[in-house]
Image 1 (cartoon, rainbow, N blue to C red):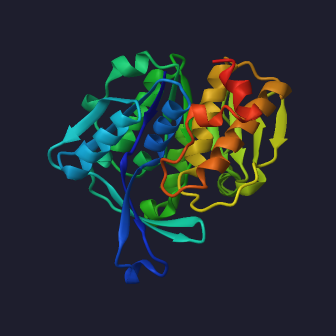
Image 2: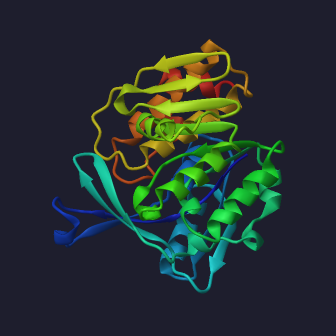
Amino acid sequence: MITSVGEVLIDMIAAEEGNLKDVKRFEKHPGGAPANVAVGVSRLGVKASLISKVGNDPFGRFLLERLKEEGVNTDGIAIDTEKHTGVVFVQLKGAKPSFILYDGVAYFNLRREDINFNILEDSRIVHFGSVLLARSPSRETMLWVMEELRDRAVISFDVNIRRDLWRNREEEMFKTIEKAIGLADILKVSDEELKLLEGEGIKAEGRLLTAITLGKEGCILRTQEYEVKIPGYPVKPIDTTGAGDAFTAALLVGVIAFREYFTESTLMKIGRFANLVAGLSTTKRGAWSVPRREELMKYSEAREIFSKL
């Protein structure tokens, strides 16, 4: 099983072009990077769970229902009676999204007592996003869970820098992210984020595997022994929201398929699969757009992975 830890929220995607201040209509979609990964993992045929927190409100109930429909185990999602479910407003410029996120929501109130360790102990890989690091008490909770799981499960971490959440606290942001990177076995980072981290003198490497995403150009997968560059899968994107999460879901499924046995050949197969899934996910609107396993069987890149599961 693969478990994600982090935010699940409502993406309110602008239904018309223009600046957010002028938009009158929005489409409601489920989202949140760790939730996107969990849904992607489930759609790819691997058991998935999510540890998060939602409000005791209609949006929270909507998200729980949708996650269950997607086959994601929701036993690790706590209900907050004080904070509302998170909502993010999204404006697409072409296929690229821009976001407005809000404070004071349920997932930032994730506490130690909310964590279901029975789920974590049954998980082969536990994946973390970086958004929870931006606020307390979720920051302390997330770092505590990562430290508790060290050497007990494979820890995956998506750097996913959101400067607007840190509000001019960049020194604190980089120090906190560096701490999380130091606990990660698998690190997912974009080429732009990698440059930022290296500019701060931060070594951005996972202990097992580092995945550097290059947008439409594909990705680089790196271990201590090998480094391979895999070209992107060519598509005409409609909405790139969640594409990085689709990549991560496929990456982690690929890691399970090859049981962390990394050679140049297995890395190429994992990378081709991750690029395929990420590319296809951009051809539909919304973050939960990973194609299902049965839809992917016509692709050789997918069959190589599924045959190993």
